[in-house]
Length: 227
Image (cartoon, rainbow, N blue to C red; front, side):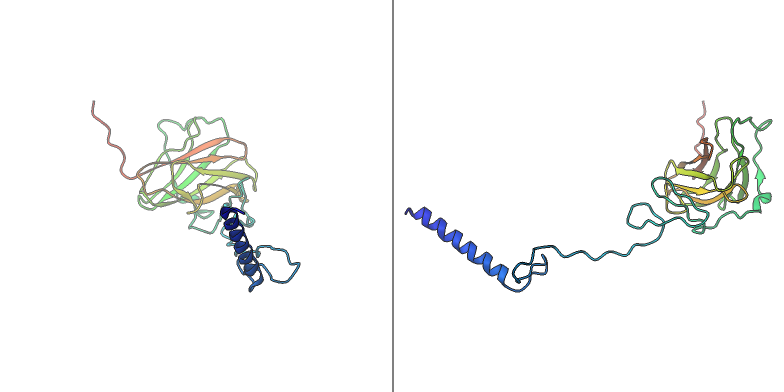
């Protein structure tokens, strides 16, 4: 027998004896192996992690919506009590935005946005223009503003989708979420603009499928260049 063949047989035998010793010693916790005959090798089941009910949609801490909330297909939920909101009945203290001339005609459902900005002490009742856009409101980077949308045709309980288009978070948590209109056909939420100066828009999808845009400008307005 060639020396190379003998060496190979010796190495195989040594490896076999080592594996036999390893299996016959004390249980191996990492793989759940038992030295008892006939026991199959199976990994230990992992202990289930606790699920936090905070209303996110990443699959690790999702929950069912509370009363008065709605979900999108992604599972996102609006939490109505996570921030200070404009309360029902406070709309009378909001000054209507005065369009030049007469208010523009809008063919869709009339929706008023009551917006409160603490840094400017502004409380305005905004109406949309022909393109479905609300007048721009000034705010500060990182500031949280309060918004209450008042619908005129949609039924109570109808879902309204909200999406932050340029950064910032709705209810300090979501970029995209949804909520249900209350008995007064209204929906209140808080919006925190990002720390970056510039434009911040919220896209609103009404129950009838119309799109409307709330617009904020964080920081100082851009200076107009002289011709």
